[in-house]
Length: 286
Image 1 (cartoon, rainbow, N blue to C red):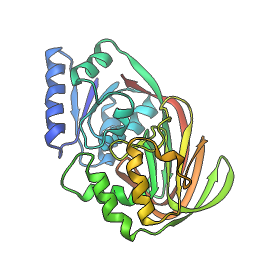
Image 2 (cartoon, rainbow, N blue to C red; image 1 turned 30 degrees about the vertical axis):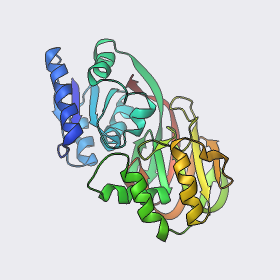
Image 3 (tube, rainbow, N blue to C red; image 1 turned 45 degrees about the horizontal axis):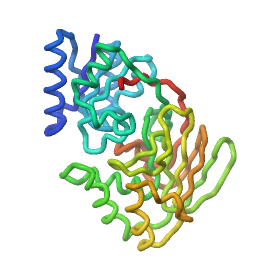
Image 4 (tube, helix red, strand yellow; image 1 turned 60 degrees about the vertical axis):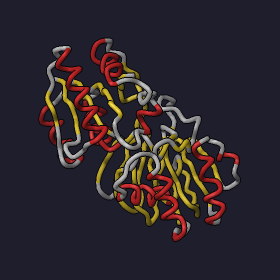
């Protein structure tokens, strides 16, 4: 059975993408069941109850994340239809430049899927799976503020940064990287396997979803004016030469800090996390 996951509260681009997806399925006589839920937890329950053998997720990074635990656990094939404000994971997969009918054709007719990595994350609120970027620092403050904005699109992330940066203070981190302890004080620590954050910010341009590694992106303590000078370079990926920026390859990370934890716009908890690489566990239509 094909499960169609749609955010019931979404409008605009998600509503249009959902209509096009359903039109394709019905035109091609493909049976499906719409699985909608108000929360990620309810979505997980719906998926477990319905047990779809293949999942089509229509929406942004939040909708995609709501199905990841199920599809990874059940080794279910995933078809992602990007229709959110960020779409970072879909962008890294090259899906944002494709028509909806093309993505569906690749997965449902040609059955062309690519195995990619994921991240298992344990926080104070439970266990999650993500394929994008874990934020803990200024980036999570920006995530939280961006979620409050009524307008969509990538502009809400730089707007949120300008709102949060003036009152932000550096954070003390306790890190255990591949079983080695490190103390770090800085502006943020982002763990990523996509290398993209916030609607197209290329925090680690060379990062790949299928290279069986994770990247830890750190920015040490810098002044607010310097931060705002470096920030625009993230969209071009030219910020890595700045002395405050560092990138480290790893397979596991334990992070402790008094900060909210976000994964591609979605709140996951507070105070830190334990993250592990899950190599090649996710099959996504490309």
